Image (cartoon, rainbow, N blue to C red; front, side, top):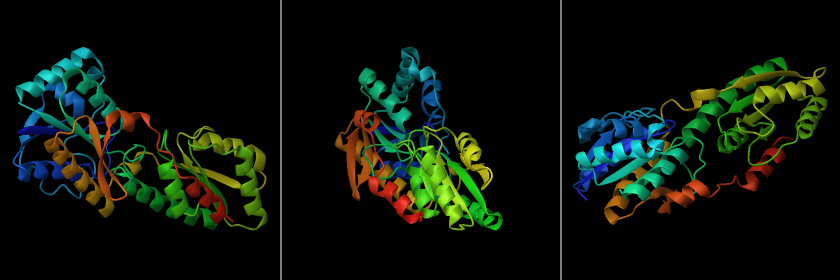
Length: 324
């Protein structure tokens, strides 16, 4: 293998630039030519493929977002779109790919490999931390710290006005951001998609805190909780405790995606970027590079896509213990 390409796809995550940098410089170190593809699969179809050098990735390790841009491509979901992508890669002499992204990115890579057999190694770039085959994904630590900073600030005003705040964080299918920012932020309740939290339990916990003269309470809600969004849950709770508690809602939204990546995310992204390049050199195909127990591992895309990554029961139990 003499020439590879790197691209980012799906939702952006802090640390993607650090990963791009590691892929480019890792490839050059090992004597490979490296190309970039702008806007993920859309750029692959459009032929937006260009050579990269060590200087191409200077001064980006500390930046959020992705310098290669990102997109979700409906055209790549069609056989015609994937054929265009393949032809453009062949015209550019690309022999292997490094895909930085999440579940959707790897699903596309799985289909693409089955059709055209271009070797691909993925790097898990998603703030949700929902990919099987790695302890942490690129961007997760930064997103948790961003959410935690917001929770700390909201608690100040909650305490000043004796209020209950429902704070919605990202996590349509995964409660990892909610559970870690909730524990770190001292939340009384954390609601996540992985487990059902009955509304009557929320009501009883809040009422119990009120009877013990708690000055404020924080409820962290993952956006994918089965009871609905934080606004929906707050409305349901208000009808049962309106005479006792002053309830407000804050949705953090896309603020969790941006910002300077933490040291942990920069180091993780760098390890995974180099690991992806070395995986291609070793002949790995259709796998994701990940870190499990501080060791580099390679997991088939089909497993990262299909296998669940549950939240440890001890974390859920800890929320209850620490809310007293």
